[in-house]
Length: 128
Image (cartoon, rainbow, N blue to C red; front, side):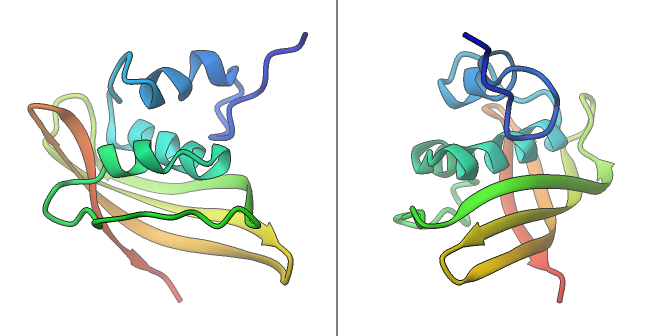
């Protein structure tokens, strides 16, 4: 059986890339790695991981994913900060989806902070 490729686009198998983060076996080393793992959570339908990786100050009370939307591509466009020695960073990306009514994408500049529990998503500005 061929391992399933990680949705984040790393080229690695999901079991070696984002899945250990989803399972809580390790934490993201950079803001970009956290953003990629969050994209993978959308792609595999894991709202619990999305909530856990969301900063408590902006985390929604509930999160329901649309089962009819399929996320199929992630392009990381730019990063600023968010490295192993940083406490904050941004990641600009475009994520592509398709659903019953067609296709589209989300282009966002996301903000991340690192605390005692590792990197967390704070919020983002959607590009229009």
